[in-house]
Picture: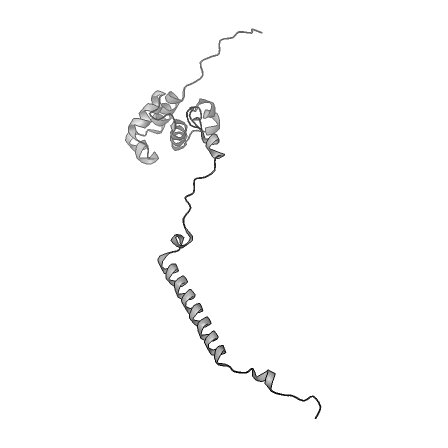
Length: 153
């Protein structure tokens, strides 16, 4: 057993896609119309490159499904998954900071119709209280205190 072996060249995805398209006798325009990918993108996939490396895997899978290729067999040939974040983005460090919320005064938060309803309720309550106090001030004596009830007949 040899320790250092030269690995045989693994098949490339681009020529495999081109061969599958030619075997199905589909033109680039028909493939582009069916997959909703541009012709330039399909050509770059068949040449082994890609226009947008972030979406290369997605486009390759879409095109392979259209051609009827088994995704299980071509999985090792697919472009690598994109990185979730770039080196300069600091998502997790910003997650622990408190959210910036601008505090508004209570009455400013109410909608204009809400303010009107609030003022109307306060006015009605104050007028009702004033009227009740005015009526009670007119009473000279409390009837149930001045009336004598006898328990024994």
